[in-house]
Length: 391
Image 1 (cartoon, rainbow, N blue to C red):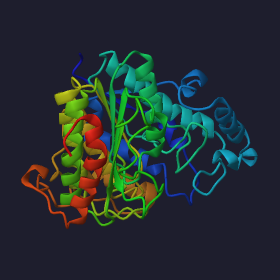
Image 2: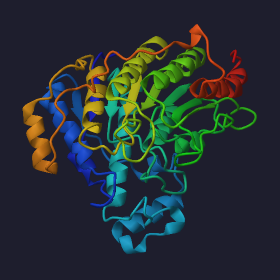
Image 3: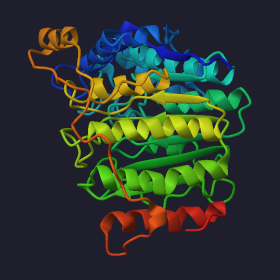
């Protein structure tokens, strides 16, 4: 297997643009790529642009009538059919919607193919991770579910076990739904509790379809306000044990940056440094349990200047085996780019000042009165016995 990493990038992905008032500002993608270049990480990876996903690929997950509806809205946004979740406040229709969405999906699918075929060890598509789109509808800023499409393509190529780990602040509901009945796919999502955040799913009791799919979905519903120590404690109390048991042939991870304490759309209190720690943990888990085969995706993240570019640049550096040290100063050339694009000052360092992040390991015992520990216990009790693991 090649030790190289792929970075999927095509400037045209910034055409995934719901308009100037929408929180998913595509400047976050442009600024991330700008920071990757400013650190020279584009020379540590192979930067590749793939073709848009074609209809046959999209139909691996999405219904034909839904794809047709997206195309109609793309050609004429006035024809958007809200029955498919198009033309709503969350997912406004825009000209070129199908093309931009299919392009992002194509990057994730091509990345998955390259990793499975041994053309690269790791691959990153930070424009991807659009995990809310359903087989028959748009949802939560997501038109086509590139994560599900990448996994479906892996299965089509003969992969027998794919693990999907989602650390976005929102539940990875679309990916869970796509593989609810499929024992070849293990989906694990750590997210803010559905009582307090969209999409109001991802309860611990959601464990997969009865029968073959039972135990194939694992959900950790974190209390609002969870910070670095609790977030890392929950991750390490659940994810490594599951992956060691499942033995995935490919690990797919989703790294939405909206767990951050500055994110305007959610209520966790996680720092950039904890996000980096989880990225490193996913990298290590890919090597420990998936022969190094790792596809890392972006996702949510609406602090588009201060948080998203730094978080995903760390992700690229880790995948490239050229990690950026947290204390590193942000290049002034990139801060100039930030100001030129947004009229905002850019952050000065690649840290929130919390590195290294400490947490108490689950094996040291738990507190039944602690809300975070209660959340972890609920997950372990609901899902672990279904997989033959001790709660």
